Amino acid sequence: MDVVLLKPPIGGILGLEMLTFVEPLGLISVAACLEQDGHRVTVIDLRLEGEEAGLARLAELEPQLVGLQCNFTTERFRTRRLARKVRALLPEAFLVVGGHDSSRDPEWFQLEEIDAVAIGDGEEVLPALVAALEQGGDLRRVPGLSLRQGSEFVPTGAAPSRRDLDTLPLPSRHLIARYAPHYYINFRKPLALMETARGCPFKCNFCSVWKFHESSFREKSPERVVAELAEIEAPNIFITDDIFWMNVKRGEEMARQIKAAGIKKYFTVQTRTDIICKFPHLIEMWKDCGSLAIFLGLEAVTDEGLAAVNKKNTANNNVRAIEILKELGVGFTPNFIVDPAWDREDFARLRDWIDSTGAYNSGFSVLTPLPGTDLWEEAQRRVTTQNWEMFDIVHAVLPTRLPLDEFYEEYSRLWRHALEVRYRHRGKARTYFQLGLALATGKVTLGAVKKGMNLARVFSRAETFLEAHQGPAPVAEARPS
Image 1 (cartoon, one colour):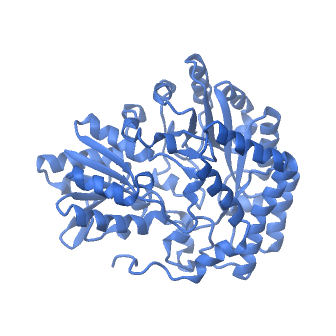
Image 2 (cartoon, helix red, strand yellow; image 1 turned 30 degrees about the vertical axis):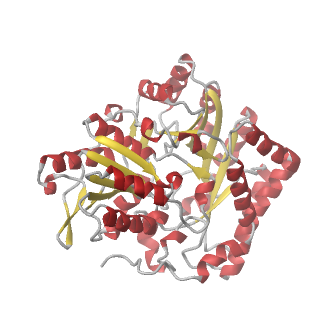
Image 3 (cartoon, helix red, strand yellow; image 1 turned 90 degrees about the vertical axis):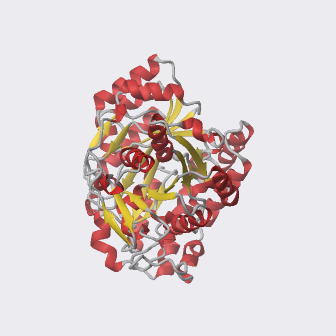
């Protein structure tokens, strides 16, 4: 069967994709399973192809099935508009929407233009759906769907039990080869995403990953990880695991096998500070695999703040982990959650913490109740907007304790302060020199640098965030009844 998988175009209020513009790993992972079954698959990234050109290409291909990916809540409006355009172009094609966000809230995608919503891991659901379509089978027997039957959608039951990740084929990166040079994160490119584990055993109230994976945690073997790394041409790898090095022995063995294979990459990983504090030797082992940078979801600078989001960590671990990374010469990017209920003292406390630690790479996310999280269940009645574009974790969608304009003044001041601390520690000239070097070596494009610097500038202005509150939500985009 001919299948086309679409990544929706760029959108949103601030265009946050400009700092993190990564390959559609979910689509190429599903595509690999479909290709393994003998189907012909095309992946079109409309962010790079352009919507008009991408849809024209789609029309020429005339696939029997089109899959749309909606991973993030901010992509909801774009995905639904895209579904209508696809239906107009290909009235006979089977149209399915999948991805993390649509799995969390499938009812929101129950439109007449859409034939089914895939719920769960796409590798488990899509191959069975395509096989049933090709063979004329009863789609009601394909588990993991919200299936349109006339004017209603009916559930087909839970997707199959999640399989051993080593049994999945390697992602079909050849399908996005034309786009590969353009993916990057924080100006480092070309970049590939790689998954070595899936799920999370922790239960932070703002996160839906553990709920999506039903608190399971599955890992790929070190051998499988090395085999995939050997096929990736990009020099930069962002490992998508929500918590890297959860299994310490496996983390050690991966490092040993990567080094033995002679693979050298610039790895960016995400992990917890308590793991760093207990097992700093892992950092040293992974430094030997090339270069290493670590994203740290610190969330809060007090034990009370950590407990409020059910982080199950301590403020002391956060400070100690940063000291360890500094001692080892490993770059890190801390991220903090800014609660709309904060007053001025809370903002000041975070600024003081950044001063004392010198954590100039810090980022700041506004506490956002996303569908599918414990926080959503608790706070959805207090949400102040139905404009899903504002659920981008840099806008307040819950009532603020401070007047809104004062909240955003304090929030934008955090971004200004982090930049000031960077200049204090690194020097303004050195910062710009490093950007110039990245340009000269082709690691990033001039357009990306301009957009990134523009974001740094606009994030320092309260008006940037206030503007979104002044307009109505997109017209005719209410939740399906």
